Image (cartoon, rainbow, N blue to C red; front, top):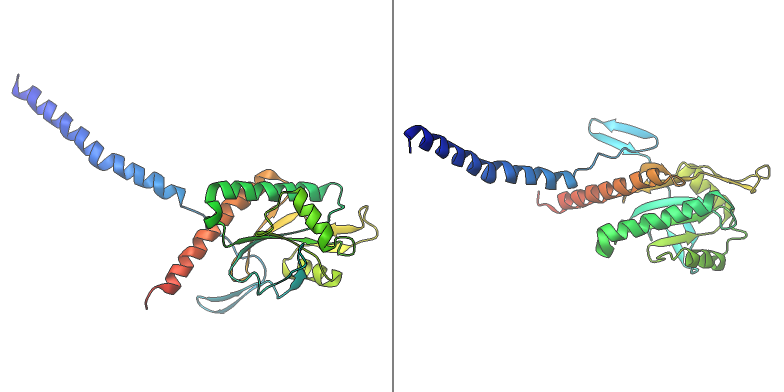
Length: 237
């Protein structure tokens, strides 16, 4: 065997070794890292810059409603929860059934991907815009038809004025009674994503599956952000 052949063979072995020890692990690291790379979610609503690095963002105001089991749900009840919020009514013939089905499928997909432990800080809130008809019992039957996990998905009713105010001035969605509308009610088809500090972080068309899929991705990003924030607060200073 010539010296030239031995040198070429040695170089080939070194190249293969470098590939196995450096290139492959680096590639696997990048792939694993990519799975946990999320975009920074925006803050929706008016904001006020108090000083460089100090900005006050829009905050959902306090509320108090009644859920499908007759329990009072307030802003204190949902403290430290990531929220997905919408406005519907049970007799709605078109838009609401689609929204509720999309919400149901969103929960099933998230549960399959994250498990119960990963969703312990997530809560869905569906508000009725027809509280006169949608009593807790009616909402409970509606939830049952959807196979909703009511530990994590609350169907809320209460004073109509308070509900409409919370939709319009709290979550920045249209929600009202309108005698000129075919169904007597006008409400936005959007789902709203809210972080643990009551800031609105995203809005998604609840009648479009692709938009709800984006919500799923953004919700996971928000959970990751909230986890990182909690770790920073726990870190010794």
